[in-house]
Image (cartoon, rainbow, N blue to C red; front, side, top):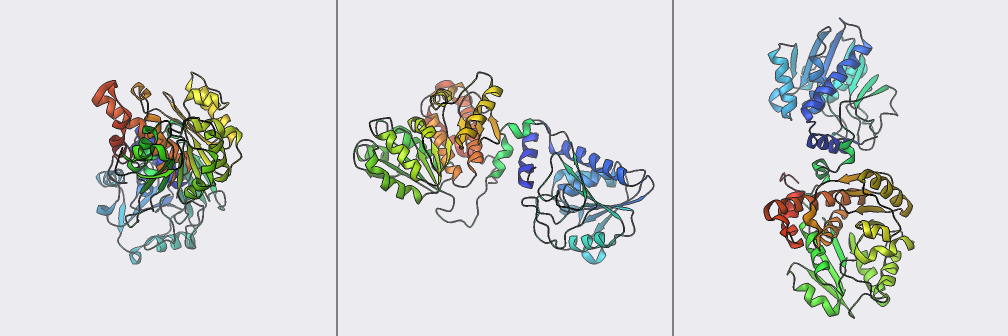
Length: 479
């Protein structure tokens, strides 16, 4: 089952893999026409009621495959207000071929007539809430009619995110949905057909640009609404926590703080005036620091734990104590990873090991990425946490769903790129589910690395990625 928003991601990923939405719409329309033919005989009166989005576009395609019927196509709204280019192109195709089309300007002009079958293609998976006009009047007419009602993808008025139905939703006899079933369809008193429209399995396996459509930002948000991240790192190393913190800022977090030993706090602060550094006593993390850090972490949306910490005496004990106390979302990297299999925590962890660290945690790996994906999924299920295992192909799994990221290159073997990835993951984990945060972060950081290597060759250094991450996350300028 896929929600409407997940289906949008899959559609966009399919386009990235070479199966464009125009082709998918053609297949969806053909599947809709097949469904019509299953329920009424040639010569029957069929009325298509199309909205102005891609759901309506599917039905406009279907109309071209229904020449053997007494066909009537009603567009709810003016053609110039059709919202997508591919739907408009299919409306224009009907005009050029002189199909019987009508425009319904307002609810008072709606006349369903007396068809034997009506195709409900008013609103698709991206719409929720009660139907407005003229869709409300059209839905009422369909529900009152003796006609067989066939809904395209979902009935108009069904929320494809949670499966709820508006009180004035269309009550279909049949539904033809695409690629996978949607929430709420099983509860309908209707037959549901899932049509294969040619979306490759890879569109759900590989992380692609469609995953970036999950990103959003409220234009009326305030400081802190888009994430506050705490990086706990530093001691023997200072660059690692600074890289993670700057990467979190570049990935959209509003506020990022670094908790570090007092011995190195000033040095970390010196990397950037954008960093907020909170020192604690000593030269490395130790158990006496845990209570203060736990209180601090509880005030943040996400914790990034591990960059530059090292494994001095007491440090890993403190890591374990902190994770066992913490109840939020934490990205765990570097030396801190080694304690994860031994702890009991209510936190949601995103672990970001390379393959050597994965083995050190007790997991298994393989040179074949497909086998590695299965092994990572099993290990993630065993741990009960999300894994982002870095490699030529990154594998992301929460034990139930597994994704593979193919961006990135051999130039990213340079030190510090993992710290950047941890920071980006932390920022995204403030506003996304852990598995989505990890997948998007892997894609964006790898893409940033591809951009930099194309410009610089294999002289890439980790700081080069910082400026390249934002375009990789928001390259279309719409997020």
